[in-house]
Length: 194
Image 1: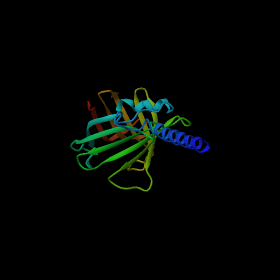
Image 2 (image 1 turned 90 degrees about the vertical axis):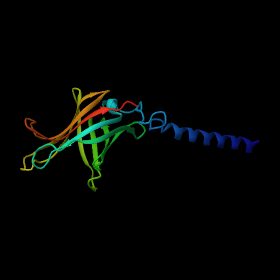
Image 3 (image 1 turned 90 degrees about the horizontal axis):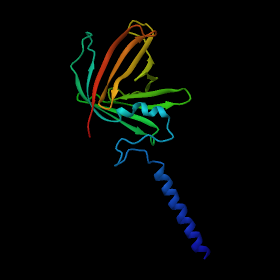
Image 4 (image 1 turned 45 degrees about the vertical axis):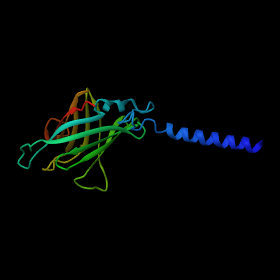
């Protein structure tokens, strides 16, 4: 009798251990939710990126050395929830073979987004990071960066015109007071209907 009760307890412990592990991943991307879901205990700000979650077909344009805009490059931009619904990851796949991505986490302590960027163009020992928040309907992120002439400023990233149909994105160097900006990269995206 003692053996049978011990065996039943072991089986129950094993079952609940497996159930707890499965529950701990329920907000990850899955067959039913291919881009994951927001964890109910995640910061409310994770929903800032909700309209972007999924796949977008985009046109990416960068500046040439002569300051003209290069021919647009086709790009797919995918956003999904990661870390069991407590962060956002994105990945760009471009027709020119230059791919990139970011991991986006919101800190309740500092009340800011922190975005860590990586690229196939070059492997870096330390990922560059932007930080920022929503400003009105836009998401605006900054990283300190000097201009080519040595002037202090920021590289500013802005998601704008965000809707369930798509969004626009621009990367630009700005002065510290943001009275002057010089765009170097812009992307227009249309949400793919799946």
